[in-house]
Length: 267
Image 1 (tube, rainbow, N blue to C red):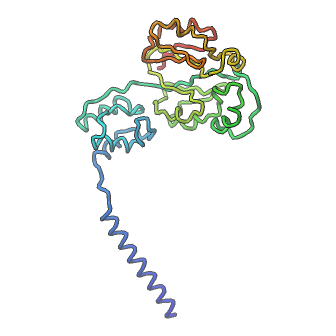
Image 2: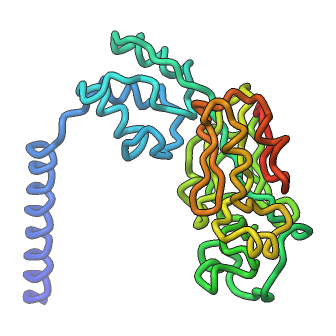
């Protein structure tokens, strides 16, 4: 019995000493709280999406508090309202956040896009794309398994006829869907402004692209030639619109022979 009691006593003393040591260490090594950063974090929406370029809301708040950045308009989900609150609290100039929404640049629906195989694997775009680019003939198109749906914290994305579609009214431009899409099909467009968008990312030559999808861009360059603003460029048999230059005149849409260009006014 004595040996057992001694052992228990020794273990108890060791535990007590360790507890005291940890308590002292927690006091001596404690990181001082940044009250400014904490307050700014509370003002941010808490999406922790990283669209601001920092690790999350806390990282952005810390950068603002420490003066590493004075740009209060980096939070897309928060918008201009949050920017003004932060600027007022920190004594900075408030920046304007241009309202944006994500768009899926693909029309590869079941009707438009042909299929090369029946896929019975994990219902994930990332996983399916590793098997010969996915079940569709067009290896550039939306696979429709919903990785972006699962990534969106705002419930703004649905799969419609095999293609992801985004509700601009619910989208907060957090970019999580952009980072998730293995095909790079999602981009941000400004809200309440008419802008042209090429709803295709196919980079194959015209004849092959048309076999893969009825609405595939064939790289004919007609849109580039007709654009007076110089907003449309064709590279690798695929057209792309610079929204900063686009005036929304619609000439590229009218000229496109396969109707893969549309004028979008997201609202």
